[in-house]
Image 1: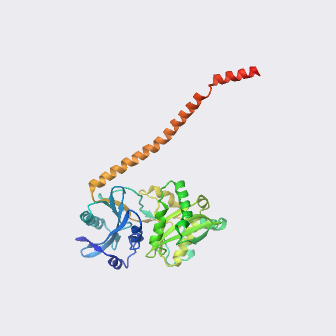
Image 2: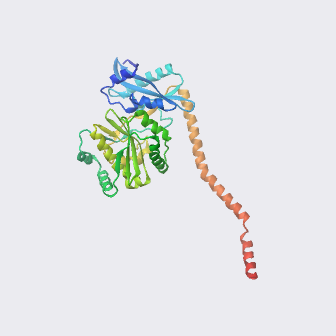
Image 3: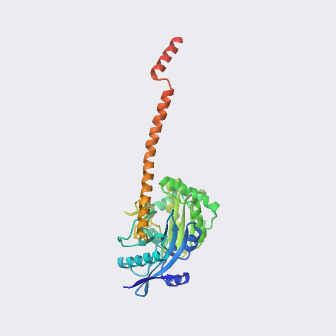
Length: 375
């Protein structure tokens, strides 16, 4: 088997993938977002050819970390045939060799793979997922969609519509000032559920760069107050719930179930074929387990997807980065563990200082007795 990477320009990439569903992150549309984000840029696109025939395409973006650079093929490569372990390894081999020759400063490449291998490393940073929930929308009536839901999903949807109806509107094209209201709900969600979020500019830049055709915003309100919202990407008739948030009131009322139901119906009517909830819990992504119950309401079927992995281009450099990050995380844990102890010690010291400033019990009792006698 002979294999090679062939560089592609935008026109060649579009022609080669005309009959292939391309994830939005691998599409030409995504380039505008990469250009708009500080520390990122589109890098190169390739066709991976085996025995002279294209087996996959891959689009890589360059990311700058603190003191290092890496490439990320989000949801790539896009395969045009069954990606066997041998084919995946061959692609990584020629890709690493090519990157090392073109840009020696790249530390590693992040890409997706179906088969485990000794050159694949858990992500240096970020969280990946290898299971998701996909609802198929082709030619499905409301009754069909309802029948495909779990019993609990149908029950929660009907209960919400009856007892706490949510008005769902598409608010695509909102300004940065308008997004501030949504961002406040995201901050509330993150604080409640204990996860990190980006600055608001990351979300508004994404919406502006991808445009209203590829990045859409749906908001669920009750009595005018935002209870739930979702940013949905749409490309090649495939939709993905990219970012989402719910207020405390929205969580209590399960507003998200009504919101997703209306989004799915809207996109189906527009000809979108699939709706991907984008990740649920698994052994590789235990932090996403809390999302599983909500997302599987709409179908009990779980879809396996290729998770992301790091592939070292400069092994010694990558090993150093891994050690540095491990030390940093250990330091953060030590500080977090020390904070309660330090707070306890500080509280004890304050109590001791207060006691030193107050008369002791015997003095207080004697003073009370003297006061009584004087009375």
